[in-house]
Image 1: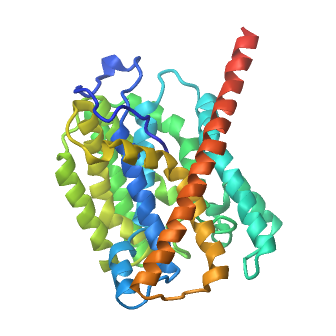
Image 2: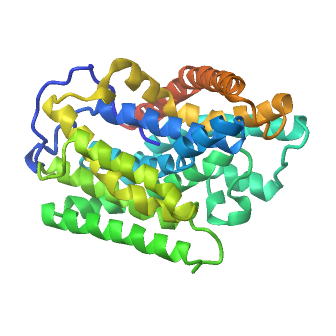
Image 3: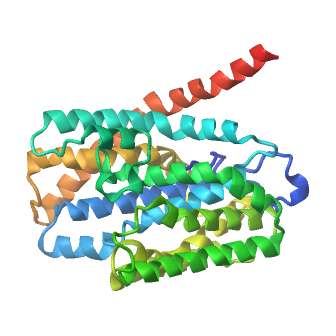
Amino acid sequence: MTTATKAPPTAPAAAPPSRTQASTPAPSLPSLTGLRWMAAVLVFGLHVHNFRYFGGAGGRFMSWGFEAGASGVSFFFVLSGFVLMWSARPGDRAPRFWWRRVARVYPVHLVTVVVALVMAFTLPRQPRPTLPQGLADVFLVHSWWRPWWQTLDPVSWSLACEAFFYAAFPLLALVLRRLEARGATVLAGLSVLAVLALAWTDAHHCWDQPISSFPAARLPEFALGAATARLVLLGRWRGPGLEASLALAVIGYFLVPQVTDDYAATACTITGFALLIPAAAVADLRGLPSLWRRRWLVRLGELSFAFYMIHLLVLRAGTHLLGTRPRYDLLTGAAVATAAFTVSLVLSWLLYEGVERPARRLLLRYPARRKTATA
């Protein structure tokens, strides 16, 4: 998960930057940060649905609204490619880029690993990882082998995919910088075709195991986001506006229950997400109206990574108070879900203010001090 830089709620009108402006910092895109929060809420709703907080009519409503919530992770993958390509620094070296990504995601990851370990060895009925499983999780390689993919903090499987994307990004950025609009469009089209092909093979059980958590299978979504960012940077994006793109994304989201689970669902949402993200970026650049740019939504978007990493641990801990699959009536289920959401949000704020921000500042200060000392 990647954060778009925060900006004032009303961005000045601006045209998308061209290649001649590559040496200047890219403008901030606060709407993308706001959209990140909505994707995190979809994942939270999916997990509340999976824990069966609601029975009866409430359970049916949760199935209708959040059964497709896993597509929020696909949105994160596309968004990550877009934001990294958008904010890529000219002449940036790969080790410096990788260090910035470590500073961005690793502190919160390590804290949630520790929390998950404490829960595993103190709470009853919690799965206890083996040493290889724990080490694979710490070093973010556990999604490459299915028996390890949901050890400790289960949602970190997507972070292992992101780690693979970060490893590949310097080469991807080098290729994209050499492409004009036509080449970037071709790459975007090939990425969509790759998603559709993988979805078809997964739906037809052509693989020995599901590929929804396999990092290499999720790379086309990341590449698609980077290619659309390149088109916006070149001033050559010609997609529909924000409202139409949002409508297509919503339609795709509600098509997901009509197909098989796992990776095949990505085929329903990939087009809408690939249109919505650049449309929101262009709205920020041109000062067009955007709900996602509101200050409170951008603030929640800043907390979304910490919220994503902690919320499932909160739900797991809650099973020792509520039991498994309690299936409450509508009012009781809503109260319990609200309590879990509130606890997750408070903890995410503590993680963001107490771990994520200060650790990132500290880690990013180290290379600067070393460079100054060398000079």
